[in-house]
Length: 404
Image (cartoon, rainbow, N blue to C red; front, side, top):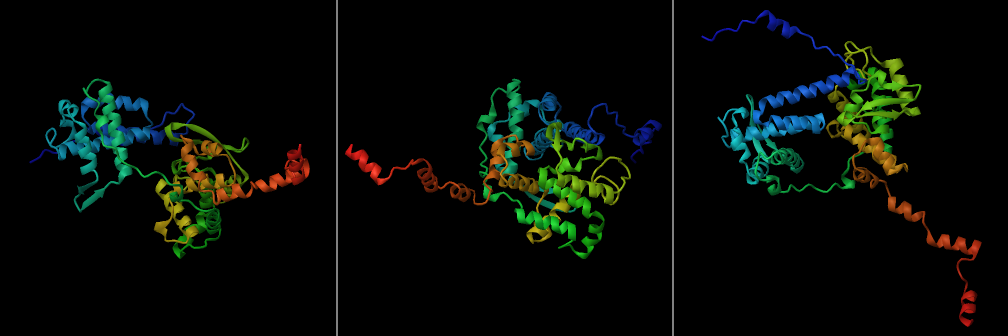
């Protein structure tokens, strides 16, 4: 018979211990908590990986953003489980049993087989069902990138004698096509905002919630389509994020970058209406801007569903065909460029690392070529010059020149 573990008073106290925030930075507590959750996730992943990769964990900690670190470690754990379960590395049970010698002896061919054969289609077995998992080229490219960073580090640290990433097979990604970018047209933005104001297109059940949240929903949609904010940036907004005297608000972007955004009249109007008329007092946190009917900070999932609902109404399609918040980010970029704003100003507003990303949205401007050519009529210009400055020679002028 298995012995029953008796918990000590210290174990009980540890289980009941509350996590407190001692925050001396100027970051709000919710941002610190979010970062702490990601750090704990990294520690959890690292605890499942081979111990001899500890120096690589330290390298990631100091060289990449926390979200990227989580992605790299997740991909590495997936790869290690493949080595254990499919290639029988170690004891065939867990990643800890993989030896450094066997890991450092991996070749480019091993990685190519993993990416090109196993990752494209594999089965995940659970208690209730088996799931067929398929990865398209974009997902495969991310896994390839994660492993490239790892093996480049091992080669640089002289833990591997050859740089095996030179032998990795390329993964072809389709070139981004401007016409394939999903976004709302300007007319559809108006339909979406009208729907959130009037309840148009909502089901009777949705109307019940809409009556209590329409000002909140409108404020979020205006922020999405005006500033092109990411869903996490909107979800983490606080009341204290806004300085109405200076007419600006603060957001925290990827890599913890702190950015000030100006407030315009539209944003001020919808925020004031929501805060003073509809916003519920939070039940736990005091500061979240967008609050659920339960009095808690809205989750990213709830915001996604909200956006999907109203964009589907704008496009007159089913709810499951509605757009994600990232499509509203694309909508903001395309609309700003269509209104004539500089591509570099839009790049700065949306926090694109490379202007080529922003250029994809500039191609969305309707009839851009036609607009340019219609406003540049050479004959009109020359005729105007002829009338004003006699820049175009007449027939008699040309005859005089010939005779002379």
